[in-house]
Image (cartoon, rainbow, N blue to C red):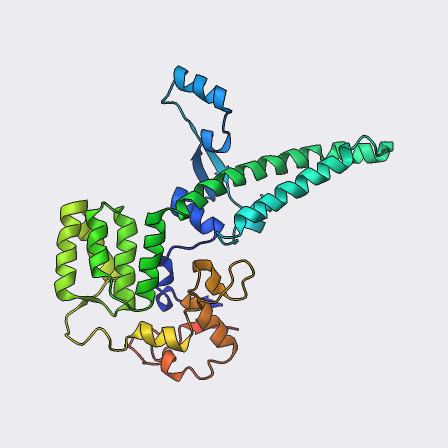
Length: 317
């Protein structure tokens, strides 16, 4: 399966609502698959010890690196869980681990030497699983708290409005004024451009001026690079915003919005962002059906000779 990234520039601009996606959004997953967190997050002290520690030194809180890869069986199970369910999933894992340990340590149950030997062999595995579970529970509490913040919910709503092809220029201006982190704001700016067939020239110049005044002149180069990459486009024409765009055609033809998906029992990739299915996924699903009924949508695939030139950007063998 080979897909050119230009087929879907929209999805990378969105905020995923899975466990792994939220970890990256809140804590930033580093190259190599690990995350740096404060030691106090994964190894919280009891209340008395915390008070004593503050008295000794209120500034020291070293960071630790936690691996996030397939070597951790629990992480492979929870990484794609939606924010609405990964908390209960980890809670059930904790209950299962506790029950497994309690069944063996029950003094009323007789054990022969072979069972005892087998249990002793499993102690390192149990300890490792317990450590992993504790780490993920603490991280889950942190990212879930961030996802429940008003600012996070407003950002998700802004993204959804843009995905519905609504203009959010005033919101973009308000976010700059409120000190939104620059690269998080730029993602929204790119999303507005990608879903609206560009930014109105007058709005673009106004927002670019505010970006320079707020974030610094060096972001002029960033905006220029984003234009070259195809993420930003200044719209010079004066057609109405309500006219059909490439994205709006794909949104309808590929059924990109599925607000009815159930995050707790998902049957559609749209659960990842609570209602939006990645364009690449929809194209793959369509390719498996031979692109039936998608003649108009196929014309919107990017190509070397302009829209509709016929170059195929998705190949499945």
